[in-house]
Figure 1: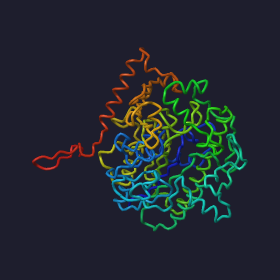
Figure 2: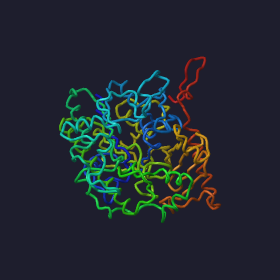
Figure 3: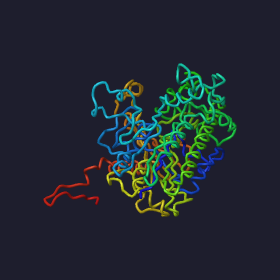
Figure 4: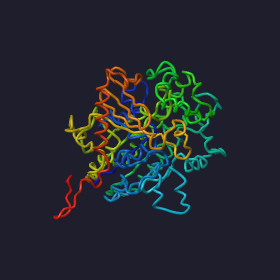
Length: 508
C-alpha cells in the first residue's frame, strides 16, 4: 500500500530560522522533534522568488528557465505536469489546504473567467478543501463565528492592537488559537478524521505565515527580545548596500513599511536599528507560532494511528531578507531570499532518521523525491533529482551537483516600472545565480554581474567581478552557469527519437 503524504509549506521561511538548523535564538520544539527522526537538508535552496515563481519550481520539478513562471501573475503553461496531477494518476486525491499561487493558462479558458483576475490560482490536480490565500475570507468568517468584529477593510485585522506607527511587538487582535495557521490546521485535522482506513491520502497544507504582515498574538509577539540574535549580514550603512548594485538601489526604493507592518506607507529608508530588531523578533515569534500548529497537526496524525505510514515533507517557497543588507522581503540574489528549510520524514526508512545532509539540494528535487517515496518515479525530463539515496543513508551520491542555482526575474509587466527605471526591455530584467562552495556568481541579462568569495566574504559584501585577480574564478563560474543552463533546457521530447524500428527513449 502506498503511504500517506503530507506536504507542508510555510511561506517566506528562512532556512536558518529553526532550532534544528542551529539558530541561537528561535525556538521550534515541534519541528526539532520532527527533524530528529527525519533527514534535514541543511543547504536547500528555492528555485526562484517571489511566491508564484518559487512555487512553480516546487510543484513542477522544473527550473524557472523551463516552467517560465517569472513573476506573480505569470500563467503556468498548461503543458507542464504538476505534483498534484502525478499523484492523482496514482490514485491519490491530492487535497489542498491554503494556496498555491499558480495563475491559470489563459489559453485554456475564455470570456470573463474570474480566474484571469488573480495570480492566486490553484495548481492543476488539487481538490480544494480550504482555499486560504492572502484573500483570507474563510478565516475571517470563522473569526466572526467566534465573536470577533471583522473590520470593514479586511486587512485592518492585521493592524497592531496598540495603533503603533513604528515596528511594534504589540499583539494581534485575535488569540493564539485563532490565527490563520490555527484555523487551517484545524480544518486539516477535521479532514483527517474523515479519511477511511486503508485508503492512502495526500494533503498539502500551505501556511501563509511567517509571511507579512508581521503581527502575531501573545505570547508569541513578545517571545523574543529584539536585542537578542545574530549580527546582521550587511554593510555599515544602507547607502553602501544600496549603492553596491543597481538592483539593490531599485529594491531600496520599493521597500515600504506597509508591506511588512500595517503602520503606514512610508519607505523603510528611515527605519532605525531598533525597528529592524523589532521586526525580526516578531518574525521569529511567527515562526514559533507556525511551529506550534505543525506540532498540533503531526500530533493529530499520530493520534489517528497514521504516523507509521505517513511521509512528511516540510519546506518553504522562499526566504526573507529580515534586515540583512538593510533589506526586507525576497528579491535578487542573496542567499537569505533563497535558502529555505527542507525536512523529509519517511517512517519506513530508519537509515535516514536523524541525518543532516550538507549536499546542495533544490526545490526542483521535491517532486521526484515524493514520487520515489510513493513508489512511482517522476518523469525523467524533470530538472530535479530524487533525494531517496540520502534518505537511505548514502553519504554521497555519484554525479550530485556541486552548486545550487536559482533565478530571479524583476520585470513588472502591468506597470512597466522596472523597465523604465533601468531603461531595459522585459526580457533583460532577469538574473541567474551559480552558488558554489566558495564562489557565488550572479549573471544578469541586462545589468553588471556580481562575484562573491564566500570563503572570505560570507556576507556577500564585496563584488569581485571586475577584480583582475578573480578573472579565472569569474570565468569558471560563468562557464558552469552556461553548462547548467545547457543541460536543463526543456528536455520533454529531446531524449526521444523516432526511428525505423519505432520510438527510442535515450533516457530509459
